[in-house]
Structures are given as structure tokens and as C-alpha cells.
Length: 108
Length: 113
Image 1 (cartoon, rainbow over the protein chains, first blue to last red):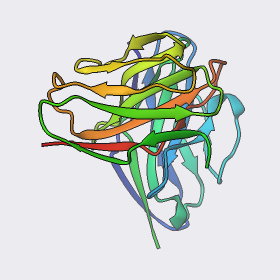
Image 2: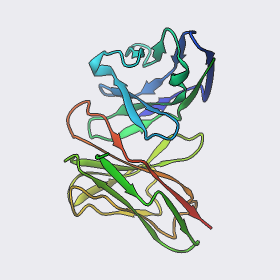
Image 3: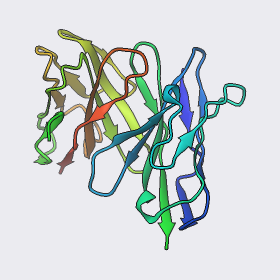
């Protein structure tokens, strides 16, 4: 069965510091991986997906199939990045499995 | 703010009563999902539907039921058989294409006493 692990429930960094939110997955097929973000009092929304290889709000995530990881990174954290972040894996049938989430706090 | 609408935002029920949560989308998405969000446990899949009149159980379907009579609507019923119904419930939808992301509603917080 597919599984997504986010080892850190809480992560706290200072403004301007680099941040990395870890995500590891187990899946026998070819994974479709996503990062979703939930800001305070807003709905859960897509941040980025591995297929796009894009940078959104300064965040990037690289799929490493050898290490089965999809870590989210940003070189210089901002206070507005404080939010809950979820890593998710979608299998071919359309079902998505989520990690437990990481709450990021960026301190001034 | 179009997209997915969940209602009501807050719902209170007595133990032993069934309750139905509404989810409507105007995105013309084929697939719809119900997740339960508990503190420290992430999102757990209850039921999902990839086409009208068809749906599948997710990881925690016991005590829940759904219907998909229309493409736009995917209501979730929390039955009296659900042992711990108090939770935050999220509805989502997506296209069935590869790498299509989920679009979420604002959620319904159900409290059963």
C-alpha cells in the first residue's frame, strides 16, 4: 500500500533562514507527488507538483526516486510562509494519500 | 468564490443521529473525495467517486455512506455506527487526468455530543 511520511510535525525557523520540509513515500508504481499548503483561515490548496518542476512562492521540490523522497525547500523563509504543509501521493486510480502534515512557523 | 462549496461550516448533532454533509462543485470535475482531518493525523480518505453513480471506499469508510447521483454533488452521511464522528471533514474534487491536483472545499466541522 502506498504511504507518505512527513517526519516533522513542527518546524520552526527564523525569517531569512533556509527551510526544508521532508517527505518520503512508498509506492510500487510511478508516483504523482504534490505539496499542498493551508494558511491560517484559508482552505487547503495546491502549492506545487513534481511534474511541473516549477518554483512557487520561492519553494521547490525535487523528486528523488532513489531515496523515494520529495522534500520541499526554500532558500530564504518569509513570515508569510507560516502554514501547515502536506505532502501527497496520487496513484493512477485517482486516490490520493496524504502525510500527517508539518506545521511551519517562521519567526521574525 | 466558485469551486467547491461545503455546507454547513459547523454542524452539531446528538449521538445516535445520522447527519449528512453537503459538497457541491462547479468545476466540472469527474472525481470527488471525502477526507477526514484530525489533529496530528493528516487527511484520511473516507470515500471517493470517479464517475456518477459509482464510488469506492477509502481507508476509513466504516460508519459513513455516500451517493453520487449528480456530477456536481457528493454528499456524505455520517451514521450512528461511526464511533468517533466528531472531526473536520474536507471535500475535494479533481479532473481524472494525470497529475491533476485536488481542489478543496472549506470544510465542515462536525461535533457530536
